[in-house]
Length: 243
Ligand code: HEC
Ligand code: HEC
Ligand code: HEC
Ligand code: HEC
Ligand code: HEC
Ligand code: HEC
Image (tube, rainbow, N blue to C red; front, side):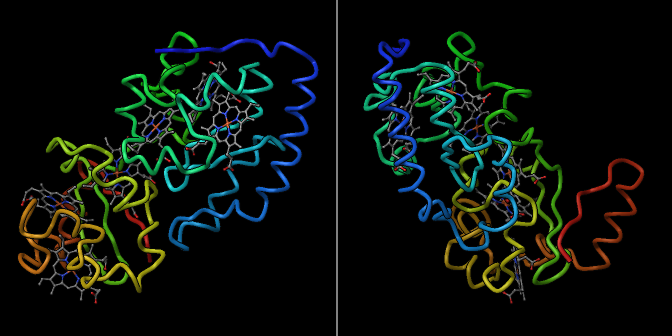
C-alpha cells in the first residue's frame, strides 16, 4: 500500500484547486447523467444532495459515492495520493478495468488503499457500507417479481449461499436496488434472458439450468405465490414489490 497523503503544501495550490473545482463543476454539469440504462436515472439521485455543493462522482448503479472536495480539501489529500497510481483522471476508468469490486477494495486496491480501517474508515461495515453506498446494503432474502408477469421468485440468500460473488450479479446483470429491473417491463422479458441478460447471465444451460426449461422453478404462479406467502407468514414475510 503506497499512500502519499500529505497536507496541501501551499495556499497557492489551495486556490488552484478551488479554481479546478469551479471549472470542473461547470464542465461536468451536462455530463453528470449516469451512463447506465435509462431506467436507472430519475428517482434515487436525490440522496447525493446531502453532500451539498461538493463535487460528487456518483458511481452508478452501485450508488457508491466519492467526493473530491471531501478528500482533496477537507481531508487535505494531494492529487497525487490518488492520481495516477490508484485512479486515472478520467471518470469511469476504474470501472472499465473490470475489477472495481469490494473484493479489490478489501484487498487494498482503489479506495481500499486508504479505506482499510487505519488511514480512513474500513470497507467491512455494516455501518461503513452506508457511508459510501448511501444504504446499509441489506440483502433481501427473497424477491418476488411481478412485472411484466406476476410471481417470479428469486431467492437472493439462496444464490449468495451458493457462493456466488455479489459482483456476479451486481451491477452488470442487476442494479443493487429492488424494483429496478421491473421499472423496464418491456426489457425484463424472456427474450432478454435467452440473450444472456438478467437471470440469463447464468441461466443458460451452462452455469445454471437454462431459462427456456423448468419454467415453474422461477414462475411459481399466483397460486404458488399465495401458498408461499401463507407458509412463510409464520416465519418471515418475503419482500414484495412491483405492481
Ligand atoms: C482520494 C482520491 C483522490 C484524490 C485525492 C483526487 N482524486 Fe481526482 N479522482 C478520483 C477518483 C476516484 C476519480 C474517478 C476515477 C474513475 O472513475 O475511475 C477521479 C477523477 C478525476 C478527474 C476526472 C473527472 C471526470 O469527470 O472525468 C479529474 C480531472 C481529477 N480526478 C482531478 C483531480 C485533481 C486535480 C486532484 C487534486 C486537487 C484530485 N483529482 C484528487 C480520486 C481522487
Ligand atoms: C470506501 C467506500 C466503500 C465502502 C465503505 C463500501 N463500499 Fe461497496 N463499493 C465501493 C465502490 C467504489 C464500489 C465499486 C463501484 C462501481 O462499480 O461503480 C463498490 C461496489 C460494491 C458492490 C458491487 C461490486 C462487488 O464488489 O460485488 C457491492 C455488492 C458492495 N460494494 C457492497 C458493499 C457492502 C456490503 C459494504 C459494507 C460491508 C460496502 N460495499 C462498503 C465503495 C465502498
Ligand atoms: C488517498 C486515500 C484515500 C482514498 C484512495 C480514498 N479515500 Fe475516502 N477518505 C479518505 C480520508 C482520509 C477520509 C476522511 C477520514 C475518514 O472519514 O476516515 C475519507 C473519507 C471518505 C468518505 C466520508 C466523507 C464524508 O463526507 O464523511 C467517503 C464517503 C469516502 N471517503 C469514500 C471514498 C471512495 C468511494 C473512495 C474510492 C473511490 C475513496 N474514498 C478513496 C482517504 C481516501
Ligand atoms: C444471483 C444474483 C445475485 C447475487 C449473487 C447477489 N444479488 Fe443482490 N440482488 C439481485 C437481484 C436480482 C436484486 C433485485 C434487483 C431488481 O429488483 O432489479 C438484488 C438486490 C440487492 C439489493 C437491494 C435491496 C433493496 O432493498 O433494494 C442489495 C442491497 C443487494 N442485492 C446486495 C447484494 C450483496 C451485498 C450481494 C453479495 C453478498 C448480492 N446482492 C449478491 C441479485 C443478486
Ligand atoms: C450469477 C449466476 C446466476 C444468476 C444471475 C441467477 N442465478 Fe439462479 N441459480 C444459479 C445457480 C448456479 C443455481 C443452482 C444451479 C442450478 O440449479 O442449475 C441457480 C438456481 C436457481 C433456482 C433453483 C433453486 C432451487 O431451489 O433449485 C431458481 C428458481 C433460480 N436460480 C432463479 C433465478 C432467477 C429468477 C434469476 C434472475 C432474477 C436468477 N436465478 C439469476 C445462478 C444464477
Ligand atoms: C431463471 C428463471 C426463469 C425461467 C426458468 C423462466 N422464466 Fe420467464 N421470466 C423470468 C423473469 C425474471 C421474468 C421477468 C420478471 C417478471 O415478469 O415478473 C420472466 C418473464 C416471463 C414472461 C413475461 C415477459 C415475456 O417474455 O413475455 C413470460 C411470458 C415468461 N417469463 C414465460 C416463461 C416460460 C414459458 C418459461 C419456460 C419455457 C420461463 N418463462 C422460464 C424468469 C424465468
